[in-house]
Each structure stands twice: as structure tokens, then as C-alpha cells.
Length: 251
Image 1 (cartoon, rainbow, N blue to C red):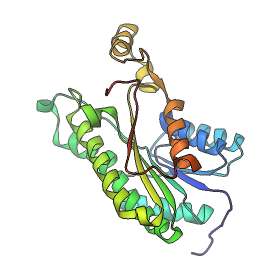
Image 2 (cartoon, rainbow, N blue to C red; image 1 turned 90 degrees about the vertical axis):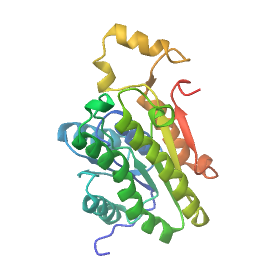
Image 3 (cartoon, rainbow, N blue to C red; image 1 turned 180 degrees about the vertical axis):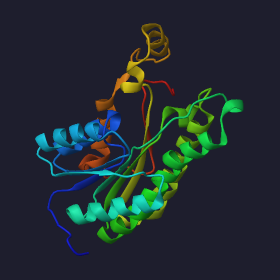
Image 4 (spheres, rainbow, N blue to C red; image 1 turned 120 degrees about the vertical axis):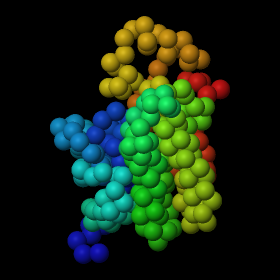
């Protein structure tokens, strides 16, 4: 491929990296010594903040505005990452959305949009990246599922379906590519402090924390730490697993 810049540093591609858990993952992998490519769908200012954080950690960074529900956009993400670094060592499928409602009130378009981003997005990304990783005979794929995909949650039938589907894809692909030393794992976060949970009132926060055995919400950095582990040398013999980062919610 013309214009490919091959680097000795590992390259990580993170979808939905402009804020929240995605931003924490980008920052942590940059601190681990990787160059970072991340996608975002909107919020250019937030994307620039993530980019600056990664640069301060010593990483080369490429931020791309792409919609992972579009298969052509996913193919383009892989191509641009290869042009940027000449390799893809880690793929983190983090981009996701919610359209919560009781089942009887979920519109067809809300079901479709959640599945398009949360389930088809990782599928499109893995289908494109696996060709690169098979040639490399190495790679780490880390999919973001959810505690809801394991235990379900009222008002989130569409979201639960998408995240349970991610677990099924993770286990299936792990079996397909293990012989080429490619690992595929999923992380299932529980209640994590993000912009979304920051808007909850204190009564709601207390109710949530009371339902968590550890008695508190997690931080984005808690999830990023597990990504770092799975992407690093210590995670090389782990594949096809779902690791819950949930304070014990799914016990």
C-alpha cells in the first residue's frame, strides 16, 4: 500500500475514543507505548482533547470521524490505520449507543440503530482487521460488551441483545483465529462513572451503588486497565473470555 508508514511501535485502533471509557482506553494504551488511532462520530472538540492527552503520553495519534455502523467506513478505518502505522496490533471495539425503553415502546428504528452500532459495527471492524492480523500472525481484539449482555436489564432489551451478540461473536472468532496467535476477548463493564451517569441525582446514584456488592460505581480507568492487560504481554494466553468490570453486579 502506497504511503504506508511502518513503525516499530505497536498501533492500537479504538472505536468511540473521544470521551468516557474510549478516551481512558486511548490514554492508557498511549501510556503503554502504543501509537493510537481512534474514531468518533461527533464531538470534534472532545476528540481533540483525547488526541492531546495521547500526544502528551508520547504517542503518535490519528483521530478519524467515522460511523462504525457503515461497513465502508469500517474498511476505511482499517486502511487509514495501516497508512498511518503499517500495522494494527490491537483493535478495541468500544463505540456504542443506547436507545432504552420498555419493550412495547421500542421503535423499529431504535432496535435497528442499536444493533447497527453495537453489534454490526464490531462485526464490520473485525471482518476488516482480521485480514491484517492473519497476515501479521498476531493481534489482539478486545470487544466492549456489558454486564447487561450477561444478566439482562429491564428497559434495555435492544441493548442487551446487542451486547450478548458481541459475546457470541467474540467466542466464535476466538476459535477461528487462535492458530494465528490472535486473541479475541470481551469486557463487560457495569456501572461506570461517565458523562451519562454524572447527570444522575444523588438518590439514583445511591440506589445504584446499593445494588453493587462493592458499593460504588467504577471508573473509566478501571476498564482501561483491563484493556491494557489484555493488550499486553501478560494477556497473551487469554482468549475467548468475557471479563466483567462491574464491582460484582453479575455475581
